[in-house]
Amino acid sequence: MNKIWLSSPHMGGEEFDFVKDAFESNWIAPLGPHVNGFENDLCEYTGAKYAAAVNSGTAAIHLALIMLGVEAGDEVICSTFTFAGSVNPVAYQKAVPVFVDSETLTWNMSPELLEEAIEDRIKKGKKPKAIIFVHLYGMPARTEKILEISRAYNIPTIEDAAEALGSKLNNKFLGTFGEIGILSFNGNKIITTSGGGALLSSKEEYILKAKFLSEQARDPAPHYQHSQIGYNYRLSNICAAIGRGQMKVLDQRVKERRNIFDFYYKNLSPLPGISFLPEPDNYFSNRWLTCIIIDSERSGGITREDVREALVKENIDSRPLWKPLHLQPVFSNYPAYTDGTSEKLFENGLCLPSGTNLSREDLQRIVNVIRNVYSKKIYVG
Ligand SMILES: *Cc1c(COP(=O)(O)O)cnc(C)c1O
Image 1: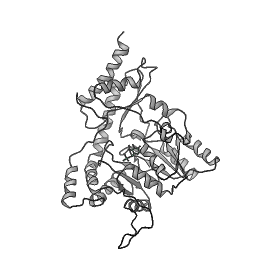
Image 2: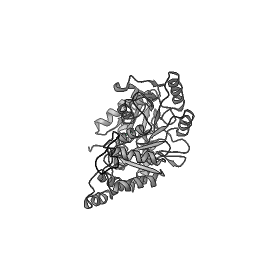
Image 3: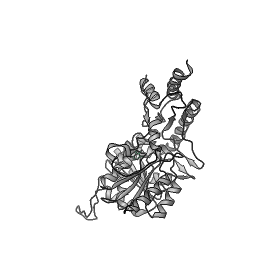
Image 4: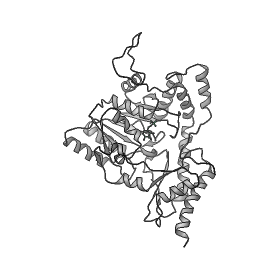
């Protein structure tokens, strides 16, 4: 049985032409025409005014924090239900993450708990310096409400759209809502540069500063002159070349991921206790990963682990939903404003293989394995 991966890279065909061009022009460096071209492509696609391409989404978040002035001891409000890459940069700055739980409509940051957390931090003597909110699995967060709170308290936002390129809210692309938006092009994301990321903003000063810091903060001078600490975070021209090819198929990839979601929904939602995250009105998700929730009280005792283990036996990769960061050993001592939502999602949720290079037969094979778990446990006897 061939291995089925959760979400593997899927080249469109034109990437190699761009890479070949990079070789032929000898732009084999962390700058070059494809880096600029990729930034233009990202702006054109998302409607962002300015973009800076860097070598990871994590680096993009790190630079965004620096631009918003986050320093040692500052508090930064973070989604707890996310990948560690969202929050590790807070620790790079020796700042303090303050975790906020999810809500059930989108699985993203709860605006109600966000406000509660801000009020409580202020009461304890420290106003948070920034808010990092995430659009998990491509589903837009309740962005308007979060931005309203951000404005009311005058705390700027970093919008982590690492998983949500191509998703929209009220027809506006995610990544363009926050003071600074960030994207990731890691190997498992909807499009990839093998590794890469970007910052988006409507403020040119942020983007110019991000480029400056990502190229080791070299002051203008004939010699190497530095008055600030810099980083080696700029995207390579080779990786950007891959990205330019990937941008050509992004719309197609979004369509395909949404079709994969529909296929799973059609085939698995009739099974008792299995549910999916619906798309609220005016929300458009790229459906980066299709996730199911298994309620063992309604499934006849079948748990998420039963399904995951059955898939493992058939050489099929699946993954529990993100483990909330406030439960991770490395972050467990930080303040957290939780109500159990993300813990429950982690306990009962499973990401199913959602790569656009999966065939209909692959998807059918996955569905059959899951149906089999049910037929063994419920329908027989
Ligand atoms: C992937 C990801 C990141 C980090 O991006 P990298 O390019 O892997 O550094 C940050 N946040 C979220 C939600 C992600 O999924």
